[in-house]
Image 1 (cartoon, rainbow, N blue to C red):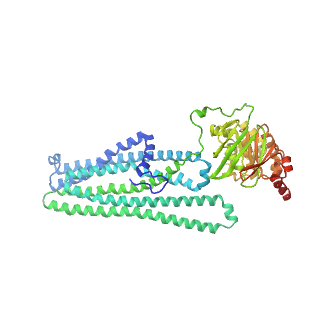
Image 2 (cartoon, rainbow, N blue to C red; image 1 turned 90 degrees about the vertical axis):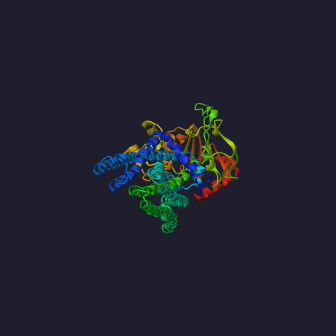
Image 3 (cartoon, rainbow, N blue to C red; image 1 turned 30 degrees about the vertical axis):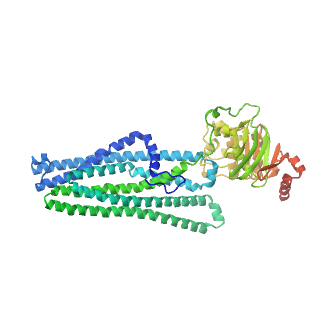
Amino acid sequence: MSSRYHGNNSETDWQLIQHLLNYCLRYKVLVTASLILLLPASISGTIQPLLIGQAISFILGEETWLFLQQISLAQGLNILAIILTLTIIIQLIFVSVQGFLVQKLGQQITADIRNDLFNHVLSLGINFFDSTPVGKLITRLTSDVEALGDVFSTGAIGVISDLFSILIIAITMFSLQWQLGLILILMMLPVTAIIIYFQQKYRQSNYKARDELSGLNAQLQENLVGIGVVQLFRREKFNSELFRVNNLEYVKALDKTIFYDSAISGTLEWISLVAIAVVLFLGGRFVLAGNLDFGTLSSFILYAQRLFNPLRQLAEKFTAIQAGLTAIERITNLLNEKVEILDPEGEIKKLPTLQVNSSQRGEIRFENVWFAYKPNQYILKNLNFTIKPGEKVALVGPTGAGKSSIIRLLCRLYDVNKGQILVDGINIKYLPQAELRKHIGVILQDGFLFAGDIKSNITLGERYSFEEIEASAKSTNIHKFIAELPQGYNTQLRERGANISGGQKQLLAFARAAIRNPKILVLDEATASLDVGTEALIQLALEKLLAKRTGIIIAHRLSTIRNVNRIFVLKTGELVESGTHRELLQKDGIYASLYKLQMLGT
């Protein structure tokens, strides 16, 4: 087997096939039944040329099977015709059933791979998505998985059937006339070598074509998501030209795969015709010399065709299998992506979880925390602070100071490089992610909404009664808006909540946090997208939401954080100032400068 042409490791084709075999083992009954059905289907197909050859010999008065020699010509031909019909019916039945089972097996394995791939992608760290275009991931989940499904739909198990048919035909030909049989078998050796060469070339071209397709999908996804910017800045023609160039590269790569696929078919057609010509020439000489019956020669001509038919089908299947191996290679690369954020294992899971009734509800400590998105390029440097239970703290500082990075680390979307983060005295690495995030409510500037009804966008798949949903909406002052909608809480939202305003989306995000009753509430520019009227409406809800909870507020508008307990001022990943609004103004430092600049702008 050839080794992989691309990728970070050096798995062979056989190792890639083993990944598929692991999925096949989940359906042992289907696999076993499909393999068993190969035997009668192959044998019945192999008998047919023998029957035709015997019929010709019987008509010409040549040597035939013993039972035919004891009956009349009409009876013998009728018996042979009945047996031939039976073999055709048996072959049709077994091939049809086996084809259905293989298709069913393929669909189930494809579904399993798609589920495993989707679950794995959802478990990968945010860092992976920062460097991987969404369009390329979509290609893995759709096009690559479908290519893998084609391996089964074209009959991967059929490869075994073709090999089995070739073996039975070869044995039968040797038993009839070993010289002609040997010639045909020897002719298959160069054919096999040519097929292997073209298949390797096909594999390389197919990998390139799939890479180009991934790029096309990524570009398409980017333009559709950013359609507003594309149209506002009149980028339609420019982006269309970029897409046209990429599309042309994809077509070129695809043309190469078509060429190598066609080359295989053309080579097989030519050599199969040569094989038949050789059989006619040499077989004719044997017939004239009296060493071979004409009926046996007829059988050989049919076997010559049938010998290359499985090889032709094998080549076609190998084309699909090579495309499938390319797909499984790309899928395996994704499945092998390391899950960076892991839950604790073994005894660590037995450590106490967050204590709901503890007097330390929502204490947060950063101890000597260092963090970098890229090696040695630290965003946060030796960060130390403690936020007391129930305390409201604001994070301020210029862009790139590390405010959002603190939130991502607290929620454990990333792990610290050095130091530790503790919530209620427990290192967050020792807590299951679900347990940690259950106690932290995060409201972002852009409240992402899923396609579906309002109710499901508040619960997000968790079980809450309608009374709890309604109570959370009332506490965040959005109940009135929802009640005025035609279907109320069952009103369907379009993708990303396109049929409601930005302010209404944000209010729903507040209700989503309120229903979960978290210990810690994080507001990351949560009111930045609200108009003055909506912001005033939600301010009272925010005060209720923050009551008896630890609060972390990131805000560029410093006028909105005057009443917090403390303000942390960050600069280039370091905590440079800390205190109340009044204390920091008196220090006349960075915070005072930022505040004065904002006041001048109002």
